[in-house]
Length: 106
Image 1 (spheres, rainbow, N blue to C red):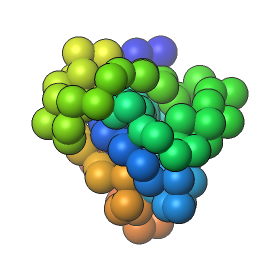
Image 2: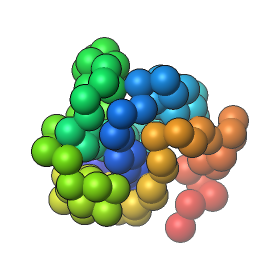
Image 3: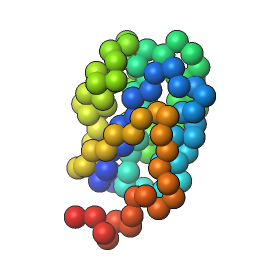
């Protein structure tokens, strides 16, 4: 199934909080949402943590040399498959129920 929404997360040296960010999107329990996590050349354990999440079919991990947040976002858009795009910084998290039921989407 092609995702309706792609959540793009540029990630640079955010090993302290990337799990909480990813878990908050996964907790939305939607199969029509993909996460495109772009490791922006991190020098800490961020990429290793992102790789732990590859088991989930909703997560796509993309590795790029450090380009900065805007470059990582652009790379995320190039790899996104959803009809709609949303950006989430790696130190943010979605509140429960943030992504409403599919029937309420256009």
